Length: 447
Image (tube, rainbow, N blue to C red):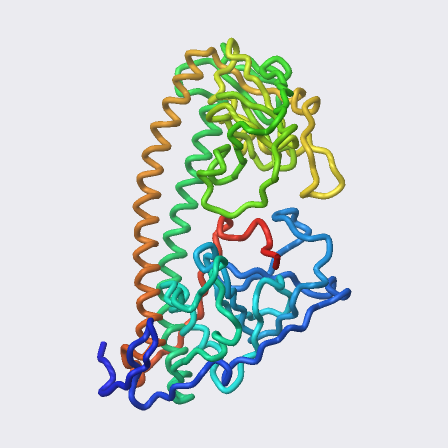
């Protein structure tokens, strides 16, 4: 693709030059800050969050995430407004977004009405800077903050309006093609995971040998099992441990649906952590830990080491004479058992359902002989490695597509390549959907 015929100096740390015929303006000429809060009428507004895939609506009633009791200090957002996070650049995956929704955002963000410029163009421009974290030179202080006066005085390139529109059309067309490829590869990953889950459900109830007789387990979710297996209540497979930490000085372990139970130091996401773990529950290596509020979602994990956890978690000691810890974890996390867990929880609404130990004890699990449990786990591990290899290859392809999209947006939005003469055909706009793991669990608040 060709460059423009001539350029003029821009004089920014992240942008040395722009096309000669482009204007150079400042943020104050295209942004008008809005500090309007939703106040006591916050229930009328949709909660929004800024994610890697843009500004998305959140469902407070789903129980996912931690939110304040009142949203009255949240800022009102209109369609076409832009949100910026002007602090903690290194800790914030996405610091800019253009809203296609009317709603409210936490007061941690600066909200701007856009004027005198195509909002989609200026969003692409700032998105290109954000993806490269190019605005770091403007951040100062311990919190790495951009002062509002500094931000409003920062220079920006402004192409002629028709050229802005062409840049937007071109980028929407090209990024839609890339997003479609990314979606296809994500679907392949989803299929791989579903096949892995299907395999797990099959072998934890039928084993890995086909030349065996079967019998009715008399447990609906388990169905037929090999004739030499048993169906045993969890009461006889696990025993609750309720040991408490006196000072909370042990290694603190946190539960994550993505990583399992791991030390806080291994988490790459920001969490709301307790100041003191005194009175927290102690767990030992290979104890089975469950999050009582999310047990019906399969949030079980073996403790990787001795440590202290939330007092709201349940710690279970596997009866290793009957069940090996990894097999018990695998069965309880399976899609088949998840349905059984769902009918055992108590609570008025989802998000506040709890699985109590006495109810957990009533669940029956399929239990092969110990040696066969080990064989099943070896088989599952071998298949999981094959699946992981395929998934890693697809994720690498997705990363390359992300890099291509990032470079394209940067080059076009900053005028490094000329797209004025390119005929953009009719196209279907395709946005990249946020992965579940991308959606924030907690809302940022202003200190």
